[in-house]
Length: 94
Image (cartoon, rainbow, N blue to C red; front, top):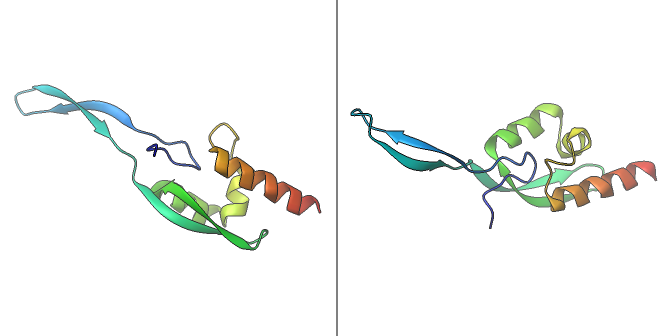
């Protein structure tokens, strides 16, 4: 399972651990991923997604999953999130 947020595309970053003596060793900065079920009001169901905690706050801030997905750029979304976005657009058109 990839360590990547399905909504923002946030992934693993790399850097250095630096000791007091300035010794450097490589390390990884992992995103704070949470397995959550987000509800879509328009589609009337929930979707299980692996999302970063920061993305959860963003979804809450803009007013829910539907609004967030419609505003999000397609390049950042996972295949699963893109499918939800397409279904949302179909539901809104109908």
